[in-house]
Image 1 (spheres, rainbow, N blue to C red):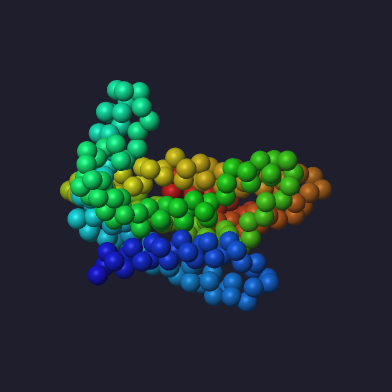
Image 2: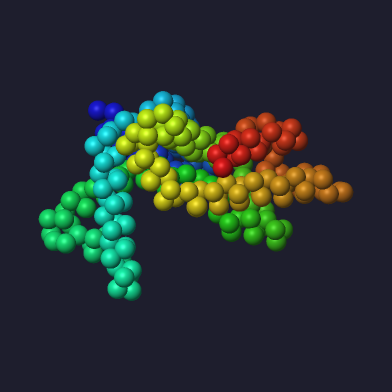
Length: 239
């Protein structure tokens, strides 16, 4: 069914991203095939989530996610009164409750992998620090394309949540928001880092005698030349 296929696609996307991280573009004959599969899957997920949301209408899974969130919050309130560190097991009062929580966590795990994949594509803060120190943190055409696509994926997910919350406030939309909220701060940090890398590159390109110094970001995130200054549109939308 759609939900099972979506879970499979979430796992597959993360596996593809991890595979790309291990391959060298010019020295691995399987690289191009993996890159093509990744781009095709991202485009498919963007279209799917734009129309049906991250949970593709699976109300049962949405209820499980919200139930897990509720138990986590309840456990946190009880634990904080005692000054203890809280984990999900303390939110359950017996073995039966623990098994329910475990199943609920597993049911939402696959959709969470989408955001894990997004974070693996977005450049870490360390790349920004390296660039400020004058070291090259190259983002080639393929990396720029992946950043653009995962940004569009974030846009698709968030816009669908907003639309649903404005009209019906469906259980799926609320659960999707809860999943996104867990990763929102990290994703924003990754988007900001990307924009700062682009800004550094623009400065480098305009330094006297430094023509081409910013080659690491030569291709903008919409695959238009950097000098056209339209590369920030996708990132702005995602933020």
